[in-house]
Length: 389
Image (cartoon, one colour):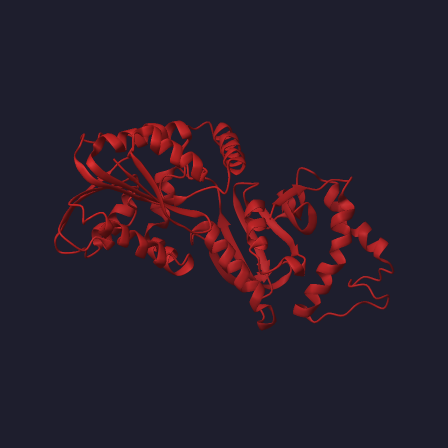
């Protein structure tokens, strides 16, 4: 299924205008409003759908402040989002979502969340959106809570308040891209809850634990991008663990944990690209959800470095986000390149996902020298890979 959003213009504005009455009809179930005397879902005495379309013209007259996006699923119109900035956004917000709509036949398939995230990714700054706070809108409230929570890793504000549009449930978040360490410092305290409760990652870490034991309970372990140590908690035997992470906040959370009594933990707050690994020192190198921010060239260097630090017959376990195919990999890389160019920063320094396709990952591991490269398990967007020296 191909999902994409485009910024509408005068040439295709009719698509949003055609979908808009369906959107208003959907809202009538929540607000309980009825059509006016002419059968149109408007408070004003608008007589025809053509007149109603004219009301939407303003969205195509201020291209620097008003952004009407159309959602396409397999090249068919599926919905829209109307986003505003400048004088049309609430005070204190850089961007505001006025309207968001997806046709019913596309709901319940993650299309709405994917589309919303694509809209958010178009602009960086402080966002606001409002939704009806009543019991008649439980689905809408749940959708936005889940979508924004997943998008921000829990870094958002949700309050009930009075707005220019009446009493609303207000969502606020800031998606301005942070440096990698700043991003993870911010989300460190809520990281475990987010991964287990919001993302449902218990099965993933169960599989990590299983693979550690299949490797024969390695004694000397290097963990790259350890975060709060979700994978280290799964080491339940005598072992020495060297844990590297760029975020002091994440490492602080790790040090609070009560690990297995026979685990000796050493932490290093630095980029694993900058830390020197002792050659032929480790039995296992372990990484989970950390390496999907880097280029092929950066990973090529890192995988060679990992290979060299492993003892003969040592293991590298990497559970991480992967792309569905090479085309998606290239698309995401190009998007990341544009953002890095705009920010004037080196690739990998800020929190932007740029996962590789599984075939690319396998090729890089083989080129690094690993004799065996295995796909132990695959989920929707995640692969658990094991490479043996």
